[in-house]
Image 1 (cartoon, rainbow, N blue to C red):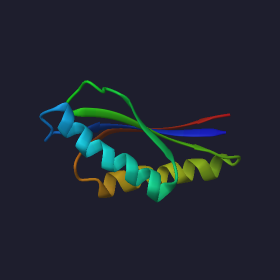
Image 2 (image 1 turned 135 degrees about the vertical axis):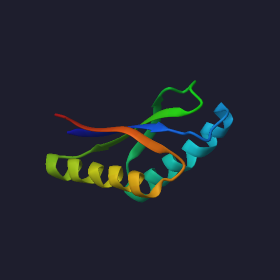
Image 3 (image 1 turned 90 degrees about the vertical axis):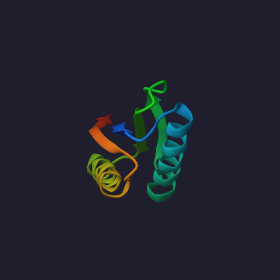
Length: 94
């Protein structure tokens, strides 16, 4: 099974793509390091104040995968102050 977490972020303080990358890159690295998930910016690369990042994890237990992604989701909401979360979605593919 593959589980993904899609996070749509609003970055109100960004005024350029360079500044956006400077804020998104540490988030991606931190999520990979802390939660051992694959992470990439997947959409809105040309928008200054918005980003869509996707976290992915592979496993054989649906409950474990969903729980792990919910933990990542809650961590982003609680600890990442550089952006506002517009939407989050967890999906499992069998």
